Length: 137
View 1 (cartoon, rainbow, N blue to C red):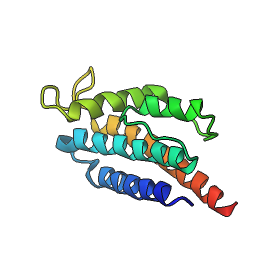
View 2: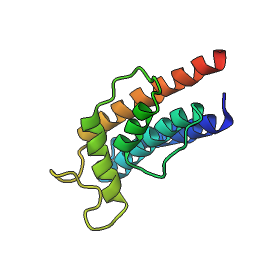
View 3: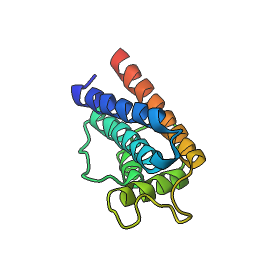
View 4: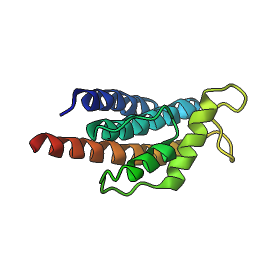
């Protein structure tokens, strides 16, 4: 396996673990949502790296997914663009104090962050599987 793809996944795993560690803390829901975004971003970038593609300088999950599609990288997984869009909104806002991590309906609830976590786990696990299959070739 390519060393860089492995490194992306190592960092993605720590973001997944951070989310799991704080997901029940209502006052940390924006931080937990931030880490779900980071896990997904790093997993998608690992897929690009694995396929020798240039990694764009973006944090936008939908743009990264479109890049994977444009590059015709077969990822064979269902990814909800609606959920990615919501995660993008929270991620961008957590970086600036004005609307600290708000969705249109306000701060993400624990149940919303759990939805984000489910998407992050799905993408992370499928990416790990893709990388393992690549190694076996």
